[in-house]
Amino acid sequence: MVAGVAFLAMMACSAALLAGFFGTLHPAFDSFSHFRIHLCVLTALLALPLLASSYRLQAAAALVFAIASLATTINALPRLWPVQAVARPADQIVYTLLQMNLRFDNPTPKKVLSLIGRTNPDVITLDEVSGMWTTELGYITSAYPYRILCPYPNGIFGVALLSRRPFAAGTEPRCEPRGAMATATVDFGGTGVDVAAIHLSWPWPREQYWQIGELAERLSSLGDTAIVAGDCNAAPWSAAVRRVASLGGLTIMPSAGPTWMHRKLPDFLRRYAGLPIDQVFSKGGVRIHSSTRLEDTGSDHLPVLVEFSVGSADKKPGDEHETALAASEVSQKSKTEPL
View (cartoon, rainbow, N blue to C red):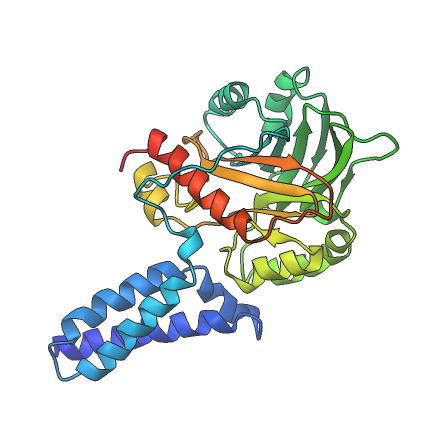
C-alpha cells in the first residue's frame, strides 16, 4: 500500500517535471518549469526507496530522468564549494548594477537605503516601487539624480531605474505599458548603454505570457549594447525567460542562485531552496564579470549585485562569459555566506 502511494506520487512528480519541458507549446506547461529543481528532488526522493520494491524499473527510470533534468538547471544551483576567481579586466572600467525587488510593503526601507549606500552601485533597477518607495527613494536623489519611476496602475508594482551616471545626451528615458519596464540610455564613459528594469507578472494562469507580448516591441528595439535586469517571476531555463532573451537579442546571465521565497521562511532556506527568478540579460559590448546575492533587506527577494564592463559591441562574451561569472560569484559568496 505504501509503495503504491509512493509510486503514484513519483509518477505525478515526473509528469509535472516532463510538462515543464514543453513550455513553448503552452504557458500552462511553462508554469511547471519554474519548479524544476524542486520536482527533481522530490522525484528522486520518492524513487530511491522504490528501487527495493516491485516498482524498481519505473523508479530507476524516474531517477535517471530526474538527474538528467537537474542537469539543465546547473547554472542556477546554489554552489557550496569555492572556485578560483577570475581576475577583473585590467584594461576596462568595471561598473556595478544592483537589482532589487523592494517589496511594495517592505517594513524596513532604511535597510534598502543603507545597502545602496554601502554598495554604491552605478545603476539600480527596482521592482515593486509603490507610493511609499517614491518617498523613500527621494532621500537619495542627490546620489542618484538620473532616474525614471514607472508606476503600475494599482500603485504597487511599478519599476524604477536610478543612475549615478548621466543619461546619454539627446535621449529620454521611457516607461512601458502598465509600469512593467523602464528604459534609459546611460552614458558609461562615453558609451551609451540601454539599461532596462523589468518586472513580469506571475506565470500562467496569470498574465505573464501576454505581458511579454506587450513588451515585445520595446525589447526588440533595445540598442546594440544593453543590460536588462529585473524580477521575471520565472526561472532562467523557462520558456518565458528564453522568450524575453530572444525578443531582445539578449544573453541570459548565469543565475546568481535562488532569490525568492515567502518572506516568513528563514533567509537560509531562501538561499538554498528558493526560486531563482531575478534575472539579468545583456548584449553587445556589455560583459558581465560577477553576480552576488546580498543580504536580506526586508523584501521576499534577495538583492543581486552585478559587476560588468562595457566594450565595443562586436566583442561578445562567448563561452568565457559563463565561466567567469560562475567562478567569480562562487568565490565572492564563499567569503560572505556560511557553507
